[in-house]
Length: 248
Image (tube, rainbow, N blue to C red; front, side, top):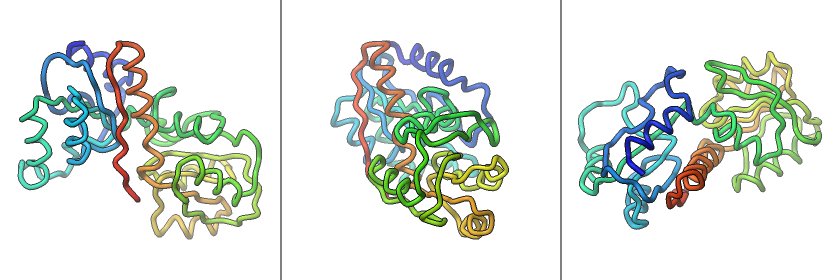
């Protein structure tokens, strides 16, 4: 399919115009006009670009792209290496940040919930990025932490009473620890995110709401993968999700 056709479809599917974001969403680096094969990944790192070139991709689809607010705009150092490689090989880069977090079916939060067997009841937080609901079946916090480890392939950091029964849960992937205080007001037994900061440890202890930090990368692998699979099925494109390991 044509690059601009894909760009229009993705912008509409993810309702890009609805979001106030920290970066541009959509086509960030323009490559060749025709796209036959896509590589998806979490972050547009140099390793992912090189892997996409080896795979014979025409475009890369990521959650974490470029041109974040506050970035130095100069194309030097690692930024020059990444963008230079894309331009030299006419490889397009599509990036979707908050729109991919929020999508009701293909989004990071929806896909994480599906993978962990969480049942969504509603949305909360800025631009309705966060999700709240319940576990498919109640379980102790220590058992839930083990379940998260098995399903995501990464041992989570858990703050809370291991013996506490978990029923209600709120979650938001990535660096969404800042939503914890708002999540507490919903009355869950636990909050799940990718990262945790120093102040959330105290807040979890004092509020009695457990905090499960399952990894920024580990919680955000599934949305972009699902989006790539959706494009492959709908348009007959080749697609491969390439996971560049990241311990954070």
